[in-house]
Structures are given as C-alpha cells and as structure tokens.
Length: 114
Length: 114
Image (cartoon, rainbow over all chains, first blue to last red; front, side, top):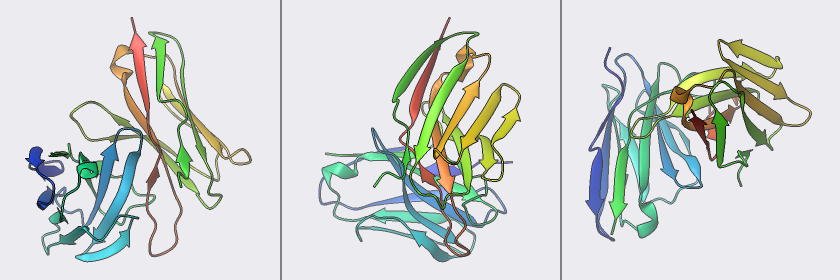
C-alpha cells in the first residue's frame, strides 16, 4: 500500500512569505501528526489531527496552523516566514490517535527560508 | 524544556560489535517508549518499543532496556551492521485519555564502520 506522501519535497521561500505543505496519509489512517526537525532540536511536535479535529498542539506560535480534510489529507501553513522556520517538516499518520500507536512518517518537506 | 534527552549526538561502532544508544527522560508520567530510525532523505521508521510495565523488550538484533527508577532507556544493537548507520530517535508518551502525544529526543547519529 502507498505510504505517507508529502508535497512539495523541497521549497525555498523568503522572509515574510507564507507556505502551505500537504500530507496524504496511508489509506485508512485517520490521524495525522506534524513535526518540525531542526539540527540539535530533534523532532518537535507541531499538532495532531484526528477525524478533522485538532487533537493536540505543540508549543509553536500561532503562525503555524493546520487542518485536516474529510479524506484525512492534511495541510499545514506557516505565515510570515522567519529564517528560523527553515527545517524539515515531517508528517506522520496512524489509524488511531498517536501516543502508543506506531506512526508512519512521510519523507518530509524541506523548507528553506532566505 | 527537553523532556526526552539523547546526550550523545553521535556514535561510531565497528561492524560486528555492540551499539548502545542511550536516552533519558524527565517526565515520570511517560509510560510507553519507542525508538525510530531515520536514514537521510527518508522519514523516521519505527524500530522497537517498550511499555513501562516491562524492563526489556527484544526483537532480533535489537533490544531495548528500561530503567524506570533512573528514567533511562537504552537501545542495544548486536551485532552492528553497516546498514544500521542512521539517526536514532527515542520517543516517549503517556496516555492522558484525550491528548497523548509523542515527545522525541534530539537523536543520535550511529555510524557502523567496516
């Protein structure tokens, strides 16, 4: 079966712009989580959606937002980009809400902010 | 506040020897722990997990040990193989009923040399 698909894989933006990243989970998975990976910081939890509802949110500013559609696909948006937003953004899906459930990750979207 | 810490950013081990990756946590409410492995340009993949009711879990060459009193877990890989070269993340979670989430460490880069 197809894995978790993230688009775009790479993108370059400038400060002040906004960006939208997309994630298509494994078929049948209803939970989608987003993580930010930066050197030295590991994977920082952004938010999780389950059945179109935000279930949990990490400690990121309001510039970071997301949503989930009825087909479980999810998008995250970052507005007013800052240099520090340069990172690998990973999406993960699971059948049930995360936690003790194993997550299946996509390959990520690498964002560079100039 | 880094609740899950991997204090060794990198580790180099010879092929055939044992690799030991360490992880410490500060939140005593964590009751389930996982290890993920990440190759470059790919998303993390699940490796092995352990519940807090156990102190050891084994899967082939991989064994995870949990010391709850020390809030410490370790991943042992025996014997190490060149294909094990990757970044390893430990993760912890607790089930709050409605909002459990995974908290990841910063990762340890393992290099297995010939």
